[in-house]
Length: 318
Ligand SMILES: [Zn+2]
Image 1 (tube, helix red, strand yellow):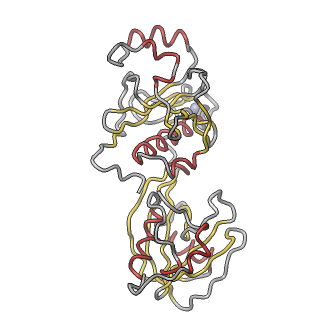
Image 2 (cartoon, rainbow, N blue to C red):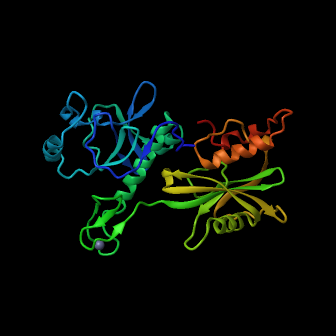
Image 3 (tube, protein in one colour):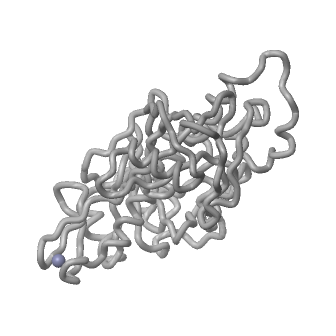
């Protein structure tokens, strides 16, 4: 999955550090990232792509004096923050693109690239940094008194400069469910999401609910199905939608007749394992669960090619 970064170490401790020239610097505009076009495709931008690159020393470091002096005098209103690090490489966010060199190699690219970008750990780092950038941008003013909010010096929080109201990062818990009846898996296509391919029944946790309550409610609301044997599987941070996905497997209680909630879903249908393509993506928890179902139930005697019919409706490839 996207957060599985092998032997690399993910660091979200709150640490203030001056950047190195090869630290990642993310500028996101809406759902688009500013990226560097190369012969092979796109790369995330670093401080080397900025006008302040010349201020780093020969080892790629910058002193606090240079940062507070030259950089700040050049960009007095620029917001620039360290978010997370993977190993020793920091991921910074900046609130303007004016710091980047206008040399023609930089372009805005839709965030769908995060589903395919390699190496995967950088995709995870950039997605997480962009989640923090959206949270900063959405909390510039206090919801209680209207005062200006600034990032806390001590922890990951936005603090009101007038009333000291604190706002913590936006992380929305949501469940994704492998609803199984005998040897079939329920998959749906959402009407209102940008992602129109097959996915599992899913939804956000409401206030006051346990995760299992959410599983029962979402399955019933979207498909009219009652569930039993609800079992926790795994969880996953999913920065692209500020969510944290919690995966459950459950069986249908009673008849497997689907009543599709048309306001939410384009389609809901049962799949046999041999209707699911073998090479679907492995970055999301949902797709790992779909693949687990397929691998468990696929007949060893040879795969049907019936999935060809639906091939374009699965998130294929990594
Ligand atoms: Zn306030």
